Length: 498
Image (cartoon, rainbow, N blue to C red):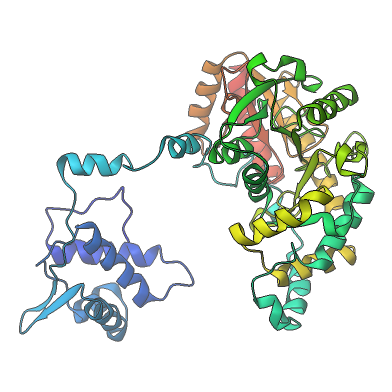
């Protein structure tokens, strides 16, 4: 289907622009889409949008085959499919025409209303503000994406193939166990040793990533209108989940010691949820101090609040061993454990895996599992079984250790490319650093200039819910090789100096 930014050429004959549009559609065809399906999708889309009005003629299958360089049977299959569904009619001796089935192209005020996405709620419009979008996941400065070029695909595929060939029939049905038992056991072993999390395997709920976990927690443990403390600046994904659940967001300032509970506004002093990234605050890269950890645990107990410990990339720490979790400071019993520990494989493996987990207090295991089955269903147990084997057999630990070394090298390369004059913050852990700038005007200028070079820059100001207290750029380095880092880093260095 032609891109919406490439309007139909009104001056050309019907046949001409249709053939040109179909040629473009074929050039953009996905690998798993047949030629006939591609033609059908494009023609049907134009009919439904009104681009092809009722009564307009269509080119013959013979002409489509000749001008598009495809077999006539392929063209016939697409046109016959349209005819079978009633989108086109055949006129004896005159060929094919678009059927009059009520599709009209919006014009005037109607078209203007359509372009403004009529029907979005105020909440829906707010949610869109949390989505950066547009820059993709590739490039020297895109934050939050691991080194996809260094993932051990061959080893992972071998494990995956082994479990697919050994799959049992029940793994193809909906799951209701909170995740594959072997994966929950592997995660429990891992977080107990690596992160000092206190848990058993049955306290773990497998999710489709951290975002799924935030959404489930917000819906099950709070009501619309309740207050959620979020870090300022902080992770937009958590804010989006809480907004979708109808919560009132209370941004709480982050300083050099992490989130400062004393900085909370009086009207938000009784939160229901508190979202934290204590080991490596996102995006500033600071660590929540022990005194503040204890203060937040005391506050949560006092007010009956739940702390969501978002431990998204703690494995990648460069100046010391990974820090112990906040959850590990609590007692084993429910009364002393107001913490839900959220982890994800999106940073340690790859985002498309769509697997994360929550370590739940014992009293929440049964209700959260039932709600998860009802609301979201459960993920692919075959993939979960393969990941469990990957962890038990040592492949996961080996990969994480290798990536820790690689990311340390790539961060050093970025620092070298930017030069000593660049004021960088963070970098003791994680997949990005923050470049401090003098003003938001400097942010905008650099972002606009970078776009002309094909470089994606992410402003620090975008992570603030209120007026930004600091200007800067969040510079990712994990998913870029040395050549990309050198090119983009040297360009940014020249811009900063000049």
